[in-house]
Length: 76
Image (cartoon, rainbow, N blue to C red; front, side, top):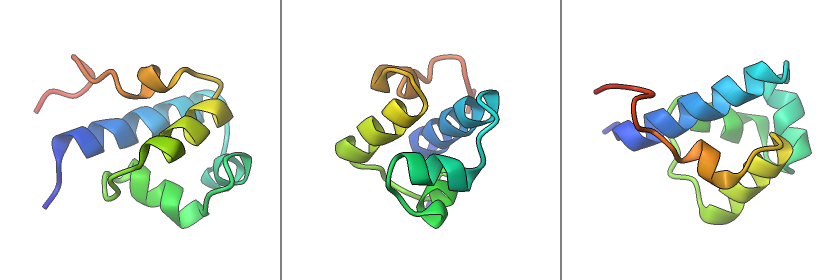
């Protein structure tokens, strides 16, 4: 079962990653996570823990809260 919040989080991660012209592999290496984990996050298949949200945010040079702001980003 898909959860809208997980999908929205994944879309925001992907958006930020693409804005910085990073591949999933590059992002994964930057935050010491596996590329398949990043892929599953971007597809809304993972319920990401707080420490990994912080790692991803640091690798993307954004505040963690910027990855958790969903209002208006995806209507559903």
